[in-house]
Length: 136
Image (cartoon, rainbow, N blue to C red; front, side, top):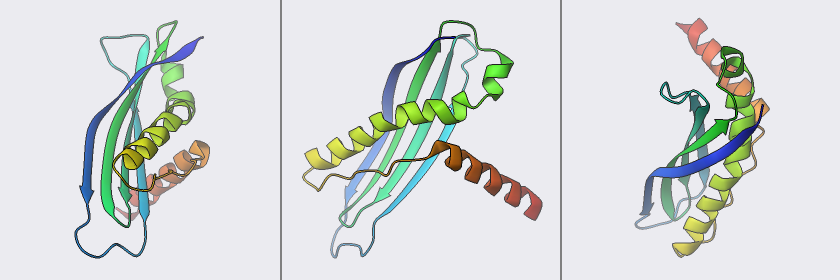
């Protein structure tokens, strides 16, 4: 089965400068998810939400990456690691470059997002969901 990144789009950006004193610390938060459009049998998407709180600004970016397969997507593929681990790992460097260029072209030091181990990221996310469910 051949899989390729077909396209990607930033669908929401919110960039705002901090008024007054700069923050002491920077922070970064990442959320991901995947989806399978019903009308396109050989395509799936990966979504990202990134929130950066820099010393001098706040940045929120929402982006969607679409992947295309040469065959129809099966239930086995939907349950595999590819949509939740491999595809985000392929897409994330494009988003890292976008954020770095956006911040640089906005007159600030470029924000270089950390590399993400998506195997560990998904494992941590699943453990967090299990602990929330057991707390209910």
